[in-house]
Image 1 (spheres, helix red, strand yellow):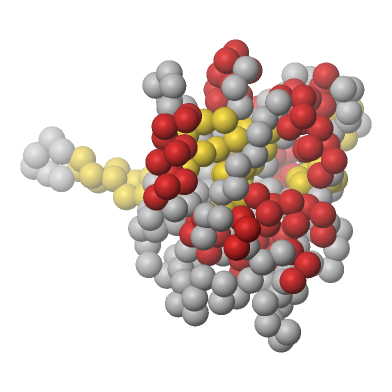
Image 2: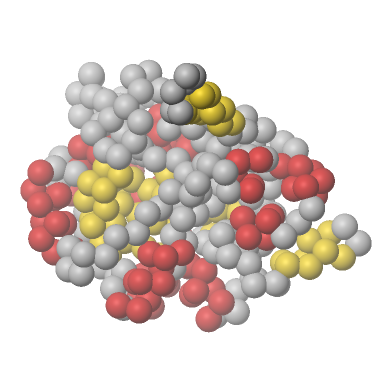
Length: 299
């Protein structure tokens, strides 16, 4: 379903009166496994390849599992990454075995992978230019009106079926101070800030359950905007949405369970953002291959 004209309006969700709020169960058939990735038809992908592949530059969005924060103390009390190396005597050959939580680092999506046109909203640069405060270590919302302002400033056009990436700045820190055991965030940052802290401070922050994290707002308007435009969403946040939720529902419930829309988190968007800024072009071609694990619930 690549034609937005054939898409049910948001106000008409759920499709069946007894289904969960805002859900679109049955839209793609009773046995569908792709959800909103059905919007990435062959024509949509072919158009994206034709229009977006210009320079040949490539940028990886995945962080290494042994990055200090990700590999040592993941948020949400997720298990840490472990790597064991085994020598296969008598030969000088080694094998390694990895054990990890699939959500303890960059989280990607889907059996067929995700291929299509992506757009980056550089909220971090926009908010610094507009002197807007943002603290990734506190429960706070990025409102839809600010994301729309980023789009306008960048001159970015949305096409139906796009893959949305939001750079909140969670991976950058320009100033991080410790004062009376409280964090004073002068410019938003997350991983680099953690890496400047002693281990006990990292463990203290990671032990908070639920963690206090900033992300996109929970609102009907945000849901409608995402429903009307995108096939998948992602960000550099540990939680794509504000957490804990400020509503009686969460975006994750609607996007994942209601629509089958993949959510990517902990994406490394720094080199991509730099390239987009230099080229003044905020759209690009996306390919994302994931572990093909039937029955996996959090990849």
